[in-house]
Length: 443
Ligand code: UGA
Image 1: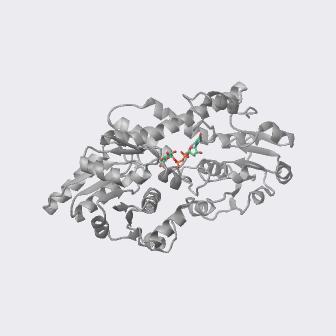
Image 2: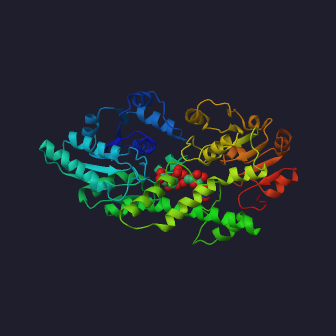
Image 3: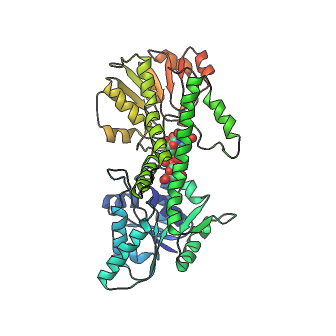
């Protein structure tokens, strides 16, 4: 099938490359000329395991095309994905200006029946707005083409996006248009492995499904973080509690890992957007507001702990940080807990010496060059002469640590672990103080 994808960001590029890999012909359209030029040379704008070879192969084999020419893009595919960004507005609601601009562009060049699929995470009611935007432009043009606007939310996890896209556990499709349904069935047929992954529903339900999924996961995390704070104060071990509750299949083991707060481009933005949507229809979402509040507080826990340990005197200290990205296997720093920690440390007059396997370039881009930030090439280099060690992201390379060496390198033999990587008893045997999340020894 011929498919067009508007927006070569994270979502659009992964979706396009995977569809091409399954044999479809895919045209990617973006307004950014340099991005398009780079992609043709095999330079990928994001770090995502497995994506570069997928893009390169499918581009070389002629199934994946890149262009800035919107007309060419619209005329190319009967199916048109909108996968542009929806950054939060000042009040936290999703900003639809890019989505609606693409809708108008599609309408400007429409030359026959088109299925327009919303892939961007958009609030309930967006498909109606996309519909209206297209109708308006068609009316101005004085043409009357048939089209369907479909909600097809994505459920990819950064760092595992290629695999998630190739082997989805569900493909949610919101439409009431029969022709669209048939075309979409054909598009996604190669994604159905042993059983049908497609779940058809009305447009509003599909739009809400995306938010409900992310908000549910964010709720699980905030719940566990609250339990972890309670465990600390009650002399319980949250890791034991986690195993104790996860073994109940109704609760399950997924997404009940306590930590230093959730980050990324999705959970914080989506929880906030659903709170705003609820507000806008006069419904106060007490639960989601609490989820957000718990998360804000959780991101401050590491700094508070350090501050207490050093009795409010962090000025002049050098803090080693392992892991900066919002989670492992990505260079994404959006809403990362490490940012809250670093910014608080700087405010308190401390220096940061950090290592992250992928995110350091991004950190440099965000914070520029500053005296109180040193980015080093290895986890060991981060320790040298630092006062203490903090772990913000659970990259695999941190899982096995040389505790003798850590103790020798640090001025104070203490680890603050925001991700519960080690067994407290084991670390303490090496003569290190170890403050994890919800595992006793709270300061
Ligand atoms: C999330 C969802 O998991 C995807 O299903 C969804 O498609 C995506 O958002 C999206 O809307 O695009 P992602 O933001 O890539 O994916 O990352 P997650 O793996 O979900 O992690 C989010 C944050 O939660 C991270 O900061 C992570 O450290 C934290 N987390 C996760 C915990 O603190 N505890 C857990 O048990 C799990």
